[in-house]
Structures are given as C-alpha cells and as structure tokens.
Image (cartoon, rainbow over all chains, first blue to last red; front, side):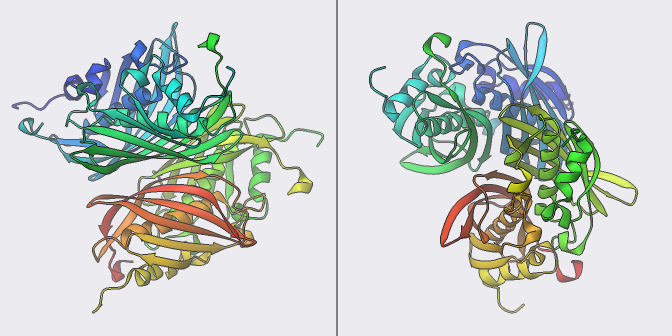
Length: 147
Length: 147
Length: 147
Length: 147
C-alpha cells in the first residue's frame, strides 16, 4: 500500500470483511486514532426473548469497537486482538439501534486496554445500556494471503 | 402448565424461541439443574476475519449457557438475567463447532454466578478456547402474554 | 439519629471503623452522593516486590471507594456490598500516594455499578495506574448492635 | 544460583520478601508448576466492618496465588505480572483463615491466565467464598540489584 490508511479507512476495512461483523450490519460512525464509534440496527435475529438486543450481540459490538480503538492507535501493520472482555449490562437495550463508543485508555507494546460505553438509541433519546472494558494484545496484522 | 418442565425442556424452550439464540443455530447438548451444555456449528456469518468464531458469538453462547445453568437451579417461574460477564479468550476457536459448558457455582435469592468453559471441537479433538464467569440476578419469568 | 448524615460523614464513618480500611490509612478526600475519592499513602507494608503499591491494596481502595460512591446514592439505612470487581492495572503505582476516584454509573434497587479510576501521585504529577468496575448489591445497613 | 529453584522455593521467595504479602502473614501451603495454594489467618486489621476478611485482602491473596501459579510454570528468570483481575465474592469470608487455590489454565509467551478458588476455613469446614480469574503478562524477573 502506497499511503497509510486513515483511522476511518482502517476500521471500515476491518468491519466490512465477510464474517460476523458485516453480517450483523455493523456501521462505522466515527474513527480517529484511539477512538471508534460503531452502530448496529435492530433486527429480529439480534434480539433476546424480551425483544432487547442480545447480550452476545452487545458484547460483540463492544469488542469490535475496542479492537478498532486500539488498532487505530498502533503502528501500521499491527492489530489488537482481544485477551479478555468484561461487560456490565446496565439497562435494557430496547432502542432501534445500539452504539458502541470505544476509547483506548492504554496503548502498550504488548498489552492495551479500552473502555466502551454502549448506548441504546430510539425515540430521540440515547441511554447508557452497557459498560465494557476490553484487554487486548498486539500482533502483526495477518497478510492478505494468510487470511 | 400442569407439570413442571424438566431442566432440558426449560433450556430447550429458552433456546428455541425466535431471536438471536435460535437464529445462530444454538443446540442444547445437556441440561440438568445447575449445569447446561450448548453447541454452535461453524457458519461463515459467525466468524471473525481470521476464520475463527467471533468473540461476540463465543460470549453470547457462554452467556446463554450460564443463564440456563442458573435458571434450571431456580424455583419454577424465576429466570436469571445477566448482570455482568467476564470472558478470557485462551486460544483460537478454529474448530467445526464450539461447546459452552456452564456450571452454577452460586445460586442466591438475588444474585447467582456461573462459570463457563468454552471448548472448540474439530478433527476429533476438543480444546479449551475461552473461560467465562457470569454474574446474574433473578427476576420473575415474563408471562406468555408479555413476551 | 436525628439528622441524616451527609455523604462525607457517611463515608468517613464507613472508613474510620476499626479494620482493614482504617488500618492501611485510608483518607477521605471527597464525597457527594454517587462520587467518592479516597487516598492512601505509601508505606512499606503496602508495596509489592518492585516497590509499587500492591495490586490487592489498589483493588481494596477501589472497592471501598466504589462502595462509598453507591452507598451515598442509596436511601438512608441501605448499604452497597460488592458482588464482583474487575480491575486493570495500567501502569506502575510508583507514587507517594494512590487516589481512587469512584463514580456510580448505575444505582438500582438490587444491583448497582461504579467505575473507579485509580491515580498514582508523586513529584507533582498524577497518572492513571488502574481502572476498575465494581458491581454491588444493596442490603440493609447492619444495625450498631449487630456489628 | 547453581541449581534452579523448586516451585515451592520460588513461591516462598516471592512471598517472604518485605512488603504487603509477608506483612499480612501470607503462608505457602502448596506449590508445583502451575498450581499454588496460599493461606492467610484472621487478624483485626484484615477485616471489613462486618468482621469478614476485606475484599481487597481476598483479592490480594488471589492475585499473589495466581502470580505464583503462572510464574512456576514459566522458564527460569521470567515472572508473571498481573494485567487484570476479576473476582466474584460468593459468601462471607467469616472463617479463621482464607485459602487461595490458584491454577494456571493458560501459559503463553506473552499472556497467561489463572483461575483461583478462595476458600474460607473455620470450625472444621471449608467453603468457597470467592472465585477469581487473573490475566498476567510475562516479563524478565528483576535482577537482585534492580529491586
């Protein structure tokens, strides 16, 4: 690649690849080094039995946002993979969409950490529905052929 | 309901409802009060960019298994909902399926806790790929009309 | 008691009782409903082998600050006890003191959650050295006789 | 040192150094590569306001046991330091002593993970009072002069 990607291009690339993230409809709202916001819209196959977004779906969005927040703060060619994730579910994710707002609070050579606020959005209001902390480690980005 | 459900019937009911859990193909392998095993088979839309099961999908399966393990140990009419979830990703979930083996380690009046071992299975072997602890609180099961 | 205590009086009371918290020298810096700041000064018996504050000491201060932040936001006569605690150690706690800044992010009838930033302070600077999320449940405050 | 230390010698050395761990009275009960058991006896300055072992003291013991379990499984000269710790408090630590039983569930080049069961012991019985998962990273053991 002749020019390094912007943070937004990098997160867009990591999000749009075939797989879980694109298949659930993840949208990139915002990206700068160390901060990434992602959104997901309500769909029947993403809900739990009470009609709220499923905890696994919320955790998956938070995880991907955290990975983006840290990866955009790393040197080119490096990517952050999740070591562990801790999430508190604070209120029902009952809105039309959920938004994960991730912020790297530590970027290290081997280990990094990001916090993620997950908002539920609908009827013109936005409410905190989950809070997540993700610990990640840094590896070389797999080359195209290797994927 | 004239007869109380068995643990297996209860988990089957909670798993087969329309929504995320049934849509990803969750299968109930085993259920007794306090212990539930669930499986999920590889599908392109459940993977991350390296071809392993996505962290959110693993967390979602662990979460549902933990909910089942605690709910089957509660009095009839009560259900456990997740307060928080902590998961360590230990090795690539690169098998043909993943299996979440949940066990309640505390069942309380208001708060319960379950541990979940997630195995990745393929080519005749099974390996631990994630370890998860879920904290849940107990609420009344929503009545049929309310769902 | 004829007058309800202020947040500062309540946290001071919970901190100064005989036991671990007072014995390590915990100082109350700030308290208002939902927010509590506590400090601890360097002492040889609070350090690990590299001369930094020990992880258990940091976790203990964060735990107590979280309990104060939630308890000050509860109705009189109720107290928050820890269900689980998750802490990331971000950098060496090498300062002359550590300060735990807790903020309740959810106050519920049965379950509450607080985030805690732990700073290490020395040589005129303050640096984030740990980030902690604490989940608590609400119980009746033990009466004086019961303690 | 002419001969490598045994696991028990290594954990004893890490525990008996001046600092928090020795000052609270940590005793090594058992150590083999990947598994370490530590104990702590009741003392007024280790308790919270209800007369149970303080959460920070429990977390500190679990943390040190986890560090021992992983470090004994690493090559000589390497030591595991805590990245993050998650602990669930399951029942009052009301016994005469607490015992932390740590087991490494993953030992990696950069990141390792240990689970810790903490038991409270008294009146001839032993009960699980906390469950803890610790994520650690591997660093070179500080040389004697550097400490």
